[in-house]
Image (cartoon, rainbow, N blue to C red; front, side, top):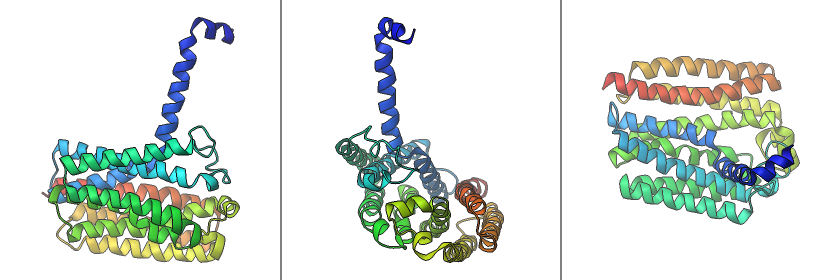
Length: 305
């Protein structure tokens, strides 16, 4: 019956095939990561605008930011295809599974970054465009191509790339780098290690198979949870110190306090009971933590300005 339908509707197979190709190219950009980064960028815009930037500016920054982040992720697929093939979590990625050729992924990533730079430089400002491109270059050449394969501090230093979007959001409105933008940068920067180390504990065998020197692989799980706890304390401390400035108000302060208390409690629980279940709980909450904290920045700016 299926063969008969294909004979009657030969275009159906072509359409399905085209959709699969489109889906694979979209997956190269890692949409969930892009969405989280855009939330931080939008919050930076709201904070800088003290009440809300124009819709057109939000759309332009989101377009440029999504293209830049998506392009960087596509280049990550290109560079990491050898280790992606060795890890169960990543072996079905489009490049690793040879559904998209490395050359096409490379061209796609470069093209997205060109579009990103042009949009931001032409319609936002040059500094926002330069920062976005710098984040891509740092992520691709410093983190992916070097740090990830050579040191346990890979995600600590490499986290700087993912910390740029809220700064871009601030710069898109103000045209300058100011202290509140640096606080936003610091929050994401110190959030990154506990987030990714918790993930590394979940997929430790994958990293061992690919010979990636993530902290649990090299230093062990006990040392990793100690580091997670210490970074969690620093993260929460910075988020609360930020609340002492005039840039944010009580909505942010309350959110940072509650979310921070939960984060530290989960890190403490993991420290006392090193299990995959507790690591997963911390990992999943860390995603929610960052999203809600930056949503609180948006809500705070709307209420107090």
